[in-house]
Image (tube, rainbow, N blue to C red; front, side, top):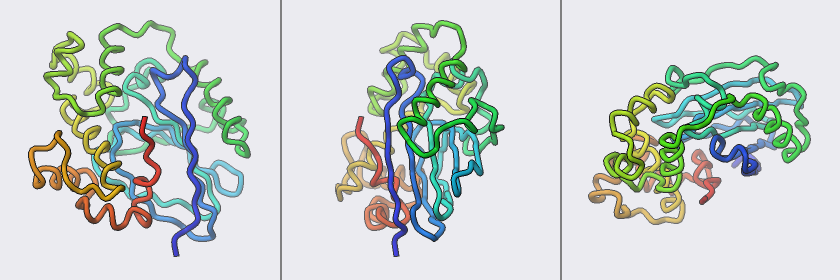
Length: 252
């Protein structure tokens, strides 16, 4: 039987919107451990796992480039903060390149998470954002980096690497150097992850044919399987079982 779960998502305040995509809460209300397959979505994350009202795990994840099985303990809550491209440099001043496809444990004193109100998600997000503001690096975001971030989240993978470079007046080489330094992957790889992630919204609705961003059906299937380990048909059939991320994707 499918474990009983809930999912809630909140957007960041305006002053953090260039660095944070969203906050989320996933709760497993059942008495059983739940296996969830997480797909690449182009975001690094900061995650808190709470069991019986106490924080059990607290960690960063880098950007995933392939699917990852994640075990959600029974009677647990998982809180997450999705981090945009600029967050490693301008929020934490640390490269996430070494934790691509990996996690990095964090001490509970970081951002004072041990003081967060775990009983109320909206209050928790407000408190978390307060600590993130204090953490923010005191330096101006360069116009080229800001244009890059804004274009990536507007285009959602629909542009080629060359088109991105041309639109923000920053060379492909410079963009790749920046993304590799802070996230550990190239612009082309980043765009492919975004493009594939956008296709999940069509797959969950039973639209299993490729959109204009793919050459043909074979290319579409190959790209989806590369990032998720499954074909579009398999994802659609199992979206309410192992692949509940499909159900929770929000259009922005």
